[in-house]
Image 1 (cartoon, rainbow, N blue to C red):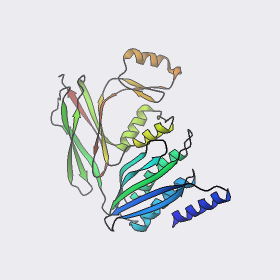
Image 2 (cartoon, helix red, strand yellow):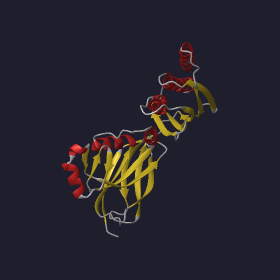
Image 3 (cartoon, rainbow, N blue to C red):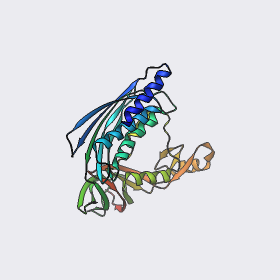
Image 4 (tube, helix red, strand yellow):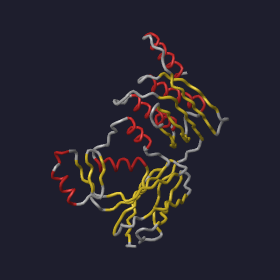
Length: 302
């Protein structure tokens, strides 16, 4: 097996250097619709180069040994990486398509690469625990339409947002998400419903400069907030102006503050924002979803 070969090579290299390698235990439970549930145990060397490489090879080699390599299928990933003296990294995502095993393995290993290669402090990974559910059916859906039954919702009220999805087989799925209109909201607002990838691209274009973590705890919080394929993200947006200052998003700023920031661009990295986020929600579904819709609404005073 590729994972065993890499592990032997890493152990041999560490032995030649006179060091006994510390191993990171990996527990992988594979729950497939084509075979009984099985649990596998690996040990990968705690090394910045070999640790992530061996983890990726071991996970992918397990998929290739027990799952179909060609044709549409779906992999669900849940679990966590336990980090010494820090919060764990959690996994909860869905991958569907012709080669979901590659996406699932990369999804697990990417945070390990980021942590073990960080410039702030040495990180010790204590354990990796994963549960993979697999099915030989594609589970994908497209966002078709979003609407509110009340075209003029009142401020301070909770209103049901209707979301219509269409699955890969053409079936319609209707979901309802309650969203709360802030008490101080009024006038023209917009509701953005988007998959994680499109929302991330839109936010990156608006912020222009990506926010970089400045410590391991910030890095872990950022990794745990990563957008998922099986979730729709909902934002209620207003027209109040804001700014991104040194990578920090500041919305709904008074005109006087914006004027000071605009005049003092040499004091830091400043980019204007043309909308303010008044509320955020998430809608988790059973499919890997794609699509984005924007709904314009008019809010009546309470």
